[in-house]
Amino acid sequence: MASQQGSAIQFRNAALAGELLMRGDNLNQIAQRDLGRYYTLIRNAATNLVPQFSEAEWALMFDLRASYPAEPMPPDLFWMSIADAVAGGEALRFGEVNGLADKVRALSPLDQAAVGDYIERWWVAKERNNG
Image 1 (cartoon, rainbow, N blue to C red):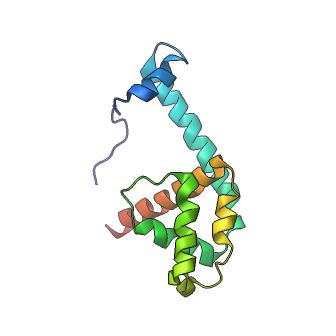
Image 2 (spheres, rainbow, N blue to C red):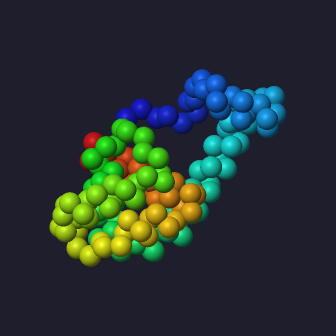
């Protein structure tokens, strides 16, 4: 795997451009600062969330995310995938996970995003270690 350190990141998004312009004129600098803030918030939230879920609950969530790794999943809808897995019986192989959908649904939007990000980072690390 080639090193991505120091690589330029570029994207165009009209909706985000408006948000960035409300924060100043140097869009690249603002985007870099805001991404740093976002990743810090998400990482800190995930650190606090990890012990709140059992191994069985994390295993189910990791498995569900593996089903659609490239598809963006709005964090506030992930609980529905969990509820479907529990209702359909697929979750039984993970052990006691009843109530997990309600637990995830009750999280703040930041914490829901942190759960999704934590799972994505786990899968990327796993793929890199196996690759």
